[in-house]
Image (cartoon, rainbow, N blue to C red):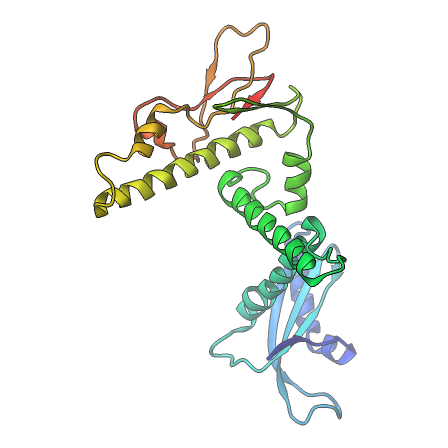
Amino acid sequence: MLKELARNKRLEARVAEAMAEARRLSEAASGKPARVFRDFLWSTKDSWSRRRRVIGKAEWTGGEANPRFLVTSLKPDVWTAKPLYEDLYCKRGEMENRIKEAQGDLFADHTSAATIRANQLRLWFASMAYVLLCALRRIGLAHTQFAAATCGTIRLKLLKIGALVKISARRVKIAFASACPSALEWRLAAARLGACTRLAIMTRDAARFSRGTSQGPPETLRSICQSPAPIVRFAPPPSASSAITHRCPTAEPSPREKCGLGPLSLRSHKFVRI
């Protein structure tokens, strides 16, 4: 059992010394938040039949006290005070935040259709969108300013932007404005996702070839090595005379690069092509 306990004057008095210590630590750290935990047995005046374990968090933040209290049945030798609050209790709240993210940013709670099947389909669409955006955040946006962004921020900054889309038989061209503020993150995400897709296909075909289910070198592997790399290009400004070759140092090399076909080519400032 683990739940939050409403604070009162008796509980606040119990952690008064810890709160004073947290205030001293915060002032010594130039006003940064500081926490001190206390673990003690507690009982109400009449509603509890026995004493229970209570975790008190004495936090000084923003120039004021912020105490919190938890009551639990977990044993102290299994969960000490600080890990119990930060690693168990706060992580449970983080799961609730992810549910709110799916509901608020991806409209998972819009189930106002007349039939159950229609509402179920809506929920499926929202769930699939959440899985795709989580994969984009985990793979394509790692080590960028959007690495810990919510789905709503990713939609607003990377997806809900004006662009000119041209579709041909071999590729899709997406042209952005030259002043697009998230152009670097966009092209980096496109390159990473393209490389991961090609690597997954290569791994699958290599596994089939090793099991003897395919004859000769995998055709998909040959086509990948001969196809254009997952690149994002920007047309050069009028004063530029040559292209700029760049690859993020944190990104894994693509299958094309592993085959010796050269790095990803990036140019600047006019349009994006994937």
